[in-house]
Length: 265
Image (cartoon, rainbow, N blue to C red; front, side, top):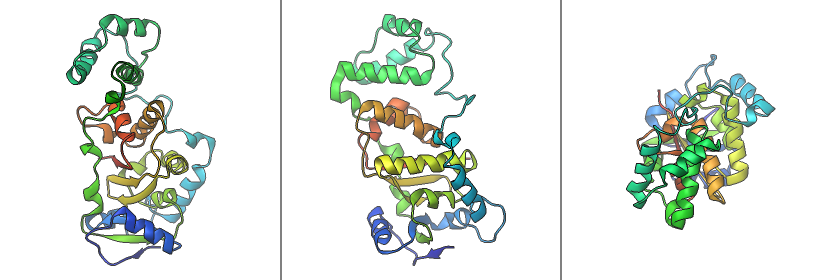
Protein backbone atom coordinates (compact mmCIF):
# COMPACT_ATOMS: atom_id res chain seq x y z
CA UNK A 1 0.00 0.00 0.00
CA UNK A 2 2.84 2.42 0.73
CA UNK A 3 6.13 3.01 -0.99
CA UNK A 4 8.46 5.16 1.13
CA UNK A 5 10.88 7.33 -0.80
CA UNK A 6 14.38 7.74 0.66
CA UNK A 7 14.37 9.54 4.03
CA UNK A 8 14.39 13.30 3.56
CA UNK A 9 15.51 16.22 5.68
CA UNK A 10 13.32 18.61 3.74
CA UNK A 11 10.17 17.91 1.76
CA UNK A 12 8.74 21.27 0.68
CA UNK A 13 5.32 21.43 -0.98
CA UNK A 14 6.95 22.17 -4.35
CA UNK A 15 8.72 18.79 -4.26
CA UNK A 16 5.44 17.04 -3.54
CA UNK A 17 3.79 18.90 -6.42
CA UNK A 18 6.50 17.67 -8.75
CA UNK A 19 6.05 14.08 -7.60
CA UNK A 20 2.29 14.35 -8.15
CA UNK A 21 2.86 15.50 -11.71
CA UNK A 22 5.31 12.69 -12.50
CA UNK A 23 3.70 9.72 -10.76
CA UNK A 24 0.21 8.18 -10.63
CA UNK A 25 0.53 8.19 -6.84
CA UNK A 26 -0.22 10.68 -4.08
CA UNK A 27 2.83 11.83 -2.06
CA UNK A 28 2.60 12.89 1.57
CA UNK A 29 5.50 13.88 3.80
CA UNK A 30 5.39 12.22 7.23
CA UNK A 31 7.74 13.00 10.12
CA UNK A 32 9.82 9.96 11.03
CA UNK A 33 8.52 9.87 14.60
CA UNK A 34 4.90 9.71 13.40
CA UNK A 35 5.26 7.23 10.54
CA UNK A 36 4.34 4.12 12.54
CA UNK A 37 1.37 5.92 14.07
CA UNK A 38 -0.02 7.35 10.82
CA UNK A 39 0.50 4.17 8.78
CA UNK A 40 0.87 1.28 11.25
CA UNK A 41 1.71 -2.22 10.01
CA UNK A 42 -0.74 -5.10 10.12
CA UNK A 43 -4.33 -5.30 8.95
CA UNK A 44 -6.79 -4.85 11.77
CA UNK A 45 -9.72 -2.51 12.18
CA UNK A 46 -7.60 0.58 12.73
CA UNK A 47 -8.53 3.82 11.02
CA UNK A 48 -5.90 3.39 8.29
CA UNK A 49 -7.48 0.10 7.19
CA UNK A 50 -8.52 0.08 3.52
CA UNK A 51 -12.05 -1.16 4.17
CA UNK A 52 -12.61 1.49 6.83
CA UNK A 53 -11.25 4.22 4.59
CA UNK A 54 -13.33 2.98 1.65
CA UNK A 55 -16.48 3.06 3.73
CA UNK A 56 -15.70 6.56 4.97
CA UNK A 57 -15.02 7.76 1.43
CA UNK A 58 -18.36 6.35 0.27
CA UNK A 59 -20.18 7.97 3.20
CA UNK A 60 -18.48 11.29 2.43
CA UNK A 61 -20.64 11.52 -0.71
CA UNK A 62 -23.91 11.32 1.27
CA UNK A 63 -25.92 14.50 2.04
CA UNK A 64 -25.32 14.17 5.80
CA UNK A 65 -21.56 14.52 5.29
CA UNK A 66 -21.72 17.78 3.34
CA UNK A 67 -21.58 19.93 6.48
CA UNK A 68 -19.08 19.81 9.33
CA UNK A 69 -21.62 21.31 11.73
CA UNK A 70 -23.52 18.83 13.86
CA UNK A 71 -26.92 19.41 15.53
CA UNK A 72 -26.61 19.66 19.29
CA UNK A 73 -22.87 20.28 19.14
CA UNK A 74 -21.94 22.65 21.99
CA UNK A 75 -18.72 24.62 22.11
CA UNK A 76 -17.24 27.85 23.42
CA UNK A 77 -17.44 29.48 20.00
CA UNK A 78 -20.99 28.38 19.20
CA UNK A 79 -22.70 28.29 22.58
CA UNK A 80 -25.80 30.50 22.93
CA UNK A 81 -25.40 33.93 24.49
CA UNK A 82 -27.72 34.40 27.43
CA UNK A 83 -27.31 38.15 27.52
CA UNK A 84 -25.04 40.98 26.42
CA UNK A 85 -23.89 42.30 29.76
CA UNK A 86 -21.11 39.84 30.52
CA UNK A 87 -19.60 39.91 27.04
CA UNK A 88 -19.74 43.64 26.32
CA UNK A 89 -16.74 44.82 28.43
CA UNK A 90 -14.51 42.02 27.12
CA UNK A 91 -15.49 42.54 23.49
CA UNK A 92 -15.00 46.30 23.64
CA UNK A 93 -11.67 46.00 25.47
CA UNK A 94 -10.37 43.54 22.89
CA UNK A 95 -11.16 45.86 19.98
CA UNK A 96 -9.80 48.92 21.83
CA UNK A 97 -6.53 47.13 22.53
CA UNK A 98 -5.88 46.71 18.84
CA UNK A 99 -7.56 49.70 17.18
CA UNK A 100 -7.66 52.30 19.93
CA UNK A 101 -11.43 52.44 20.10
CA UNK A 102 -14.27 49.93 20.02
CA UNK A 103 -18.00 49.65 19.50
CA UNK A 104 -20.30 51.30 22.00
CA UNK A 105 -22.14 49.44 24.70
CA UNK A 106 -25.40 50.67 23.18
CA UNK A 107 -24.57 49.24 19.75
CA UNK A 108 -23.81 45.79 21.14
CA UNK A 109 -26.90 45.73 23.35
CA UNK A 110 -29.08 46.82 20.43
CA UNK A 111 -27.65 44.06 18.22
CA UNK A 112 -28.39 41.52 20.93
CA UNK A 113 -31.99 42.73 21.29
CA UNK A 114 -32.48 42.51 17.50
CA UNK A 115 -31.44 38.84 17.62
CA UNK A 116 -28.17 39.40 15.79
CA UNK A 117 -26.02 37.98 18.61
CA UNK A 118 -27.34 34.52 19.36
CA UNK A 119 -23.95 32.88 19.92
CA UNK A 120 -20.24 33.64 20.07
CA UNK A 121 -19.97 33.03 16.32
CA UNK A 122 -22.51 35.79 15.72
CA UNK A 123 -20.56 38.10 18.01
CA UNK A 124 -17.32 37.40 16.16
CA UNK A 125 -18.97 38.10 12.82
CA UNK A 126 -20.56 41.32 14.14
CA UNK A 127 -17.23 42.58 15.53
CA UNK A 128 -15.37 41.74 12.31
CA UNK A 129 -17.89 43.64 10.20
CA UNK A 130 -17.78 46.59 12.62
CA UNK A 131 -13.98 46.69 12.54
CA UNK A 132 -13.90 46.60 8.75
CA UNK A 133 -16.52 49.35 8.47
CA UNK A 134 -14.55 51.55 10.87
CA UNK A 135 -10.93 50.82 9.97
CA UNK A 136 -10.98 49.48 6.42
CA UNK A 137 -8.12 47.31 5.19
CA UNK A 138 -6.22 47.57 8.47
CA UNK A 139 -9.03 45.51 10.02
CA UNK A 140 -8.25 42.54 7.80
CA UNK A 141 -4.54 42.38 8.61
CA UNK A 142 -3.83 39.56 11.09
CA UNK A 143 -1.85 40.30 14.21
CA UNK A 144 0.10 37.04 13.97
CA UNK A 145 0.38 34.04 11.68
CA UNK A 146 2.70 32.09 13.96
CA UNK A 147 0.01 29.68 15.18
CA UNK A 148 -0.50 28.38 11.61
CA UNK A 149 3.14 28.44 10.48
CA UNK A 150 3.48 24.66 10.34
CA UNK A 151 6.76 24.81 8.43
CA UNK A 152 8.55 22.52 10.89
CA UNK A 153 6.08 19.76 10.05
CA UNK A 154 7.49 19.66 6.51
CA UNK A 155 11.15 19.94 7.45
CA UNK A 156 11.66 17.45 10.27
CA UNK A 157 13.53 14.23 9.38
CA UNK A 158 10.95 12.01 7.75
CA UNK A 159 9.90 10.24 4.57
CA UNK A 160 7.80 10.96 1.53
CA UNK A 161 5.20 8.22 1.34
CA UNK A 162 3.64 7.45 -2.06
CA UNK A 163 0.05 6.26 -1.70
CA UNK A 164 -1.70 4.44 -4.57
CA UNK A 165 -4.33 7.19 -4.71
CA UNK A 166 -4.97 10.26 -6.84
CA UNK A 167 -6.57 12.81 -4.54
CA UNK A 168 -5.79 14.68 -1.35
CA UNK A 169 -8.98 13.66 0.45
CA UNK A 170 -8.37 9.98 -0.39
CA UNK A 171 -4.90 10.16 1.14
CA UNK A 172 -6.36 11.79 4.24
CA UNK A 173 -8.86 8.96 4.62
CA UNK A 174 -6.04 6.41 4.87
CA UNK A 175 -3.98 8.26 7.49
CA UNK A 176 -4.44 7.68 11.20
CA UNK A 177 -4.59 11.39 12.04
CA UNK A 178 -5.86 12.04 15.55
CA UNK A 179 -8.76 14.25 14.45
CA UNK A 180 -10.08 11.56 12.09
CA UNK A 181 -11.70 9.79 15.02
CA UNK A 182 -14.63 12.19 14.84
CA UNK A 183 -16.90 12.70 11.80
CA UNK A 184 -14.39 11.28 9.30
CA UNK A 185 -16.80 11.26 6.29
CA UNK A 186 -17.66 14.94 6.85
CA UNK A 187 -13.97 15.83 7.06
CA UNK A 188 -13.21 13.91 3.87
CA UNK A 189 -16.05 15.81 2.17
CA UNK A 190 -14.64 19.09 3.50
CA UNK A 191 -11.21 18.35 2.00
CA UNK A 192 -12.82 17.52 -1.34
CA UNK A 193 -14.85 20.74 -1.19
CA UNK A 194 -11.79 22.81 -0.22
CA UNK A 195 -9.87 21.28 -3.12
CA UNK A 196 -12.59 22.35 -5.54
CA UNK A 197 -12.89 25.87 -4.10
CA UNK A 198 -9.33 26.69 -3.08
CA UNK A 199 -7.10 24.08 -4.68
CA UNK A 200 -6.21 22.78 -1.21
CA UNK A 201 -3.84 19.80 -1.27
CA UNK A 202 -2.58 17.78 1.68
CA UNK A 203 1.22 18.01 1.78
CA UNK A 204 2.41 16.96 5.23
CA UNK A 205 0.79 15.06 8.08
CA UNK A 206 1.79 14.43 11.68
CA UNK A 207 -0.05 12.46 14.32
CA UNK A 208 -1.96 15.56 15.43
CA UNK A 209 -1.18 18.04 12.64
CA UNK A 210 -1.88 18.62 8.95
CA UNK A 211 -0.31 21.03 6.44
CA UNK A 212 -2.15 21.87 3.24
CA UNK A 213 -1.02 23.99 0.32
CA UNK A 214 -3.71 26.35 -1.02
CA UNK A 215 -3.77 27.78 -4.54
CA UNK A 216 -6.68 30.21 -4.09
CA UNK A 217 -7.57 32.34 -1.07
CA UNK A 218 -11.12 33.29 -0.02
CA UNK A 219 -12.45 36.04 -2.27
CA UNK A 220 -14.10 38.12 0.46
CA UNK A 221 -14.10 38.76 4.18
CA UNK A 222 -17.46 37.02 4.59
CA UNK A 223 -16.19 33.95 2.73
CA UNK A 224 -13.06 33.91 4.89
CA UNK A 225 -15.17 34.03 8.05
CA UNK A 226 -17.37 31.12 6.92
CA UNK A 227 -14.22 29.17 6.06
CA UNK A 228 -12.81 29.95 9.51
CA UNK A 229 -15.95 28.40 11.03
CA UNK A 230 -15.42 25.28 8.90
CA UNK A 231 -11.81 25.11 10.04
CA UNK A 232 -12.96 25.34 13.64
CA UNK A 233 -15.26 22.35 13.15
CA UNK A 234 -12.53 20.45 11.31
CA UNK A 235 -9.85 20.93 13.99
CA UNK A 236 -10.90 23.21 16.83
CA UNK A 237 -7.51 23.10 18.58
CA UNK A 238 -6.10 25.11 15.66
CA UNK A 239 -7.91 28.12 17.11
CA UNK A 240 -7.23 27.14 20.72
CA UNK A 241 -4.51 29.62 21.62
CA UNK A 242 -5.38 32.83 23.50
CA UNK A 243 -6.20 35.64 21.10
CA UNK A 244 -6.98 33.34 18.16
CA UNK A 245 -10.64 34.08 17.51
CA UNK A 246 -12.79 33.16 14.53
CA UNK A 247 -12.38 36.64 13.10
CA UNK A 248 -8.61 36.57 13.59
CA UNK A 249 -8.47 33.23 11.78
CA UNK A 250 -10.57 34.72 8.96
CA UNK A 251 -7.98 37.48 8.60
CA UNK A 252 -5.21 34.90 8.44
CA UNK A 253 -7.01 32.92 5.74
CA UNK A 254 -7.09 36.01 3.53
CA UNK A 255 -3.30 36.31 3.71
CA UNK A 256 -1.84 32.79 3.48
CA UNK A 257 -1.25 30.20 0.75
CA UNK A 258 -1.19 27.29 3.18
CA UNK A 259 -3.37 25.97 5.99
CA UNK A 260 -2.19 24.29 9.18
CA UNK A 261 -4.46 22.21 11.39
CA UNK A 262 -3.86 20.91 14.90
CA UNK A 263 -6.05 18.48 16.86
CA UNK A 264 -4.47 17.15 20.01
CA UNK A 265 -5.46 14.42 22.49
